[in-house]
Length: 337
Image (cartoon, rainbow, N blue to C red; front, side, top):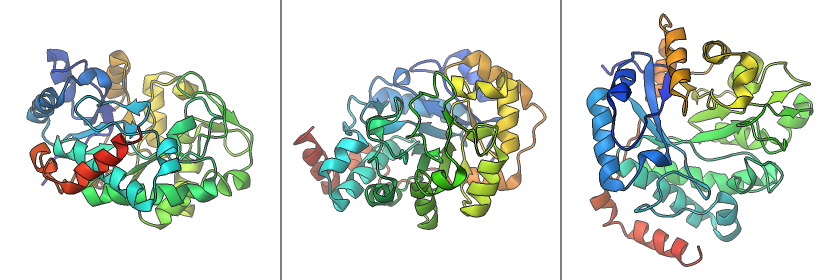
């Protein structure tokens, strides 16, 4: 039987584990680790780092933000992926599926379980943090682009994560820097920005979701990631979502409405998050883990998290290099990027 996955996702310092990294990885409430560009030099080094981490915690989930465009943590020796907006403007459904497959297959071949992708926010250039990370600005058309991309990820053996529920594209502010407030009604949100999330859930394409650090003032006083109304009444009950709920990074300024780091993780867990993400702040991560010292995960939450584990169809980079699909997709991307 697999070891229980703790409810906290952390990060590590650099390209190899420090003694402090090893100590925090051993904490029983740690269940995930997210990589950043600072953790990457080349594929060989990344494989060594993955092996080091798995030696300390074999069962841990390994994740990265590898969306493409300006949010691609591993670049050199990986295929450069365009922004989803640029990709959507050029690609047909099969090409979108091939790029989703390639993105997932490259990560899985090196032992990374999943990427926090795709962005399902509808935007063109209004929101500072979304913009070209979005497939398009029209929520009604967005799933035409996102659906084949998500199918490609599944085809490679990777779970998908839709973000940032119920939609970040209609607020100007960057929730990394402040708490955006959206003044629309629930009906307005459900009939617009929430549509891609609802459709991907109905189609069985979304395995996990990351809620936005946004407060919808006319709907609930709490930001979405700390709101039982949004995560339970709407996401679980109304939309029928049975997958994993990850918090967005709890060190972001948009999460500060809940208080200090201990209050943030408790609020996220109380609202229904399965895993809290705490990165780029080791002191904050230590505080979060201390706040959950006696926390007992819901067995259903642990089972949901287990579904995020990578199930690579292509199991090594050497095998990937023998794939005609990989070569053809890389050549197509290189022809116009």
